[in-house]
Length: 444
Image (cartoon, rainbow, N blue to C red; front, side, top):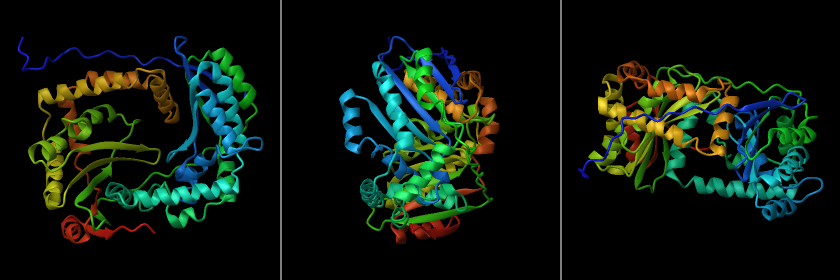
């Protein structure tokens, strides 16, 4: 056996996404189950279709999520914390751009407790003034911490420039001037919007007997009848232009670099082929941009690219950190790789490797009940077909590199493109100015 050459399997993995057990409460709320009686754990997740994109004060959704366990009419924050710790349950609220969620994982025998606490904290959150004040202090400290990080600054500058006239352009963690506007009443107002927004749904996995869980959920949530439809999320609009934004960090010895442009999302018919192409370009360690910037030139420890999918926009973001002295050449190399990607068919071996990698990660990402539950949640939240994952898997497994070239030509030659960099102003401004109008980003 020649141990200098790694064995390569030509056998593609098989996969079929398990069908969920879909049920409804008397009020119409959907409940999606993946039942595994062999598991010791149960995962309960409640997803609501309202998020930071709907907030009127930057950081408010995140603040409300952090305060949902700060006390009810019968329990203090300490009481809730002690209950959770005593039973060894993971329990909390979170907000994303487009959704608000409560998630809990624990032993199956604690399912009723988890549902009870979820119901109490969701409907009876009090937002005590002292807890709100403490949360604001923590948010200010968090913002100060992030503001020292060039990578965060480059990301914020990119979003602010990409979404100039869209809610996605504001800071989801808040800024000092917006955090100052958060108080008990603004928290309660956003909380009212949450509980009044319809079309929430449960995703439950693990040792979750559907018959028993439906009874438990019906008792606690069956009378919940929200009166508002989920608020619409406008679609971001882009023009055919390239522009640049600089987030100053004068003491930075490296440049945090982001190059972003509009892309496609999960529900687009080209998405399976795009996923192959995007993985080849920047989606794994052996990708083209990582190979060029790290292996060939030694400019970075890592370069990658990924899609950011939201209800109102889908973007593709190339990210890396490079030495100040090689920033200009790094930008040139990235655009050279984009041009190659848009003009040249993938080599046969590269295409085969990428397809096997994507298929393998899809299978690996659906091994546990919690992972499958998360994929079910994605399907329901985005109104995708129930067998969406199986269909995408089969499309990728059956794809040919000849079919990829039109995808490469269409989606890797962007007209609207934002180059964002954080570092020394004196160094970066002349470099960026070569590519388009350059603005200085300062969080107001």
